[in-house]
Length: 58
Ligand SMILES: [Zn+2]
Image (cartoon, rainbow, N blue to C red; front, side):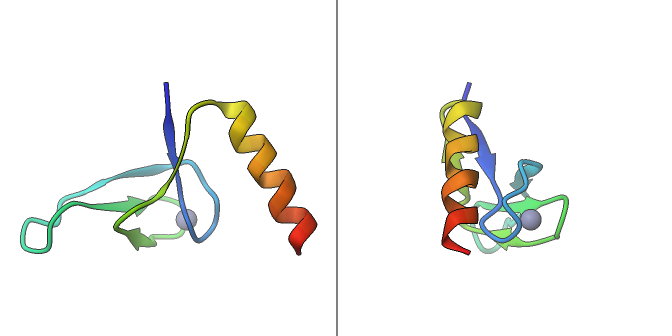
C-alpha cells in the first residue's frame, strides 16, 4: 500500500484536504502544509531510503 509524505516536513500524516473551490489538495497534519502533489512512496523501505538521502544532502 502506497502512502503520501509531506513535502515540507517529510511527515506521513498527509490527508486529502477538502478544497472544493480550488480542486484536490492534501494537508499535512504535522505542519499544516497544504500541497497539491505530496510525495508518494510504494513502501516504507523507499521512504526510509528517501529520508537517508535527504539527511546526506543537508
Ligand atoms: Zn508536514
